[in-house]
Length: 614
Image (cartoon, rainbow, N blue to C red; front, side, top):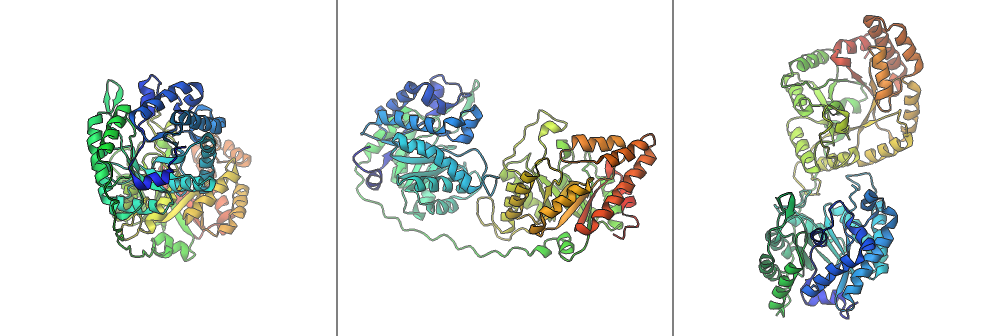
């Protein structure tokens, strides 16, 4: 370890970190499908050579080759049992090169797994994963930690907490920003710097994604807002795809010029990220030396951020007509209608009008059912509410949009009058008509409920307030017949904790499964809407039993339908009678009914409800 403590050096001068490791490995012939972190074990001399080049270029700090060396990323390469070994060896390699001349920073990146509130991994589990990686780095001899390229502030906080619980080494905590200087979750520079300042790191800043010009503009905004040292580590510009390769075009000379600007504007730590090389660091070193000594320690007057007025969420019973009816103890009735193939919703509007006249409370609209292509569920929801005057429950799935797109959709939906949401993870595209389509799945339904809950409290996914809150009435799905019911209940617990306000089940055929499920969720005191699917034939029943996950059609129902399989009319009559019997048995145990109109037959819904007093 160098004689001067890193924290002391940070108080006195600008510290220069090294540049990209991944880019250098790629330039030296390592294919991008390799696990770069594993090279610490299989080819340590190559890693050592890169470290030596950066040391020779004048870097004050070498970063370990461990950005992705956590168990979740390493699991992709079946290397999750080598977390400690890879990190310890990486630190040892960097230490051998650094000797006692310069510092070694243990590089820690995001886990690549969503944590609460946007994912199912708990904060404690995330912190433990960071600790597992950091133990190897500590034992390998690092002088400090650099936590870099984080997207979600809460994940970065857990990484800082992990480091602080393990040791007293200095911590540099960095998030990544986009071209508009906001984070990739949409948080403004002012909001994110305030949040990062609360983490307890020794220095905070930004790295990756963008080049030095945008980071300089970001620095100019945030420098007056904190007295903590600020680190700036840009990419060598945005990469350009040239003959199939991503090439970074920002030259070392360009970086050297911006190094002067960054220092003059108050950066305490500088370095390079993707696309930067030892040549970039060499010219940055020259720029740093040219500005030494710093003639005076800049004193920044901290500015108070604008006080945000407290937001009063919309009371649950006032969120929608559906919310009011459930709150008042009414037995509510949903009917499911699919969006049309094409641009005309005339048939769906007529069916919704018929259901409205019949006393149905809401129309439930699946979002891309079975991952097929139809008119957007949101468009149909708006059309039905405007043309018919009946409320809708909009299914919203996580498959097709990133978290920023989700937020935009949901704010737009609320502005258009859609107040009831059913948060669904969604089927992967391979289950639908377009098996080559890609999926996003930034979050699952648990994360989506958290996003909705934040919107209902007047803030976006980054925690930035936006004024008047939404008032979504948030529902979630549940499967009483799940093969692993304990896992289903655990996920349901997370959904309710995140803010779910009612449950809609998969279609119920096996009453015993539903009763068992009801018994297990009694403690939640949450409205339960049971799914009901009037079967139309034995083939329909067999499909539900064998191809719809979690649906169990009992043998006695299958036998009844087999006896009438030669007659479509008789099959439909028996299926309707079975649905009526199921409803009679479960009505007293549920707060509402979600009836599917099989193959669009809304008259079947009437047949099921006729004479039931609902």
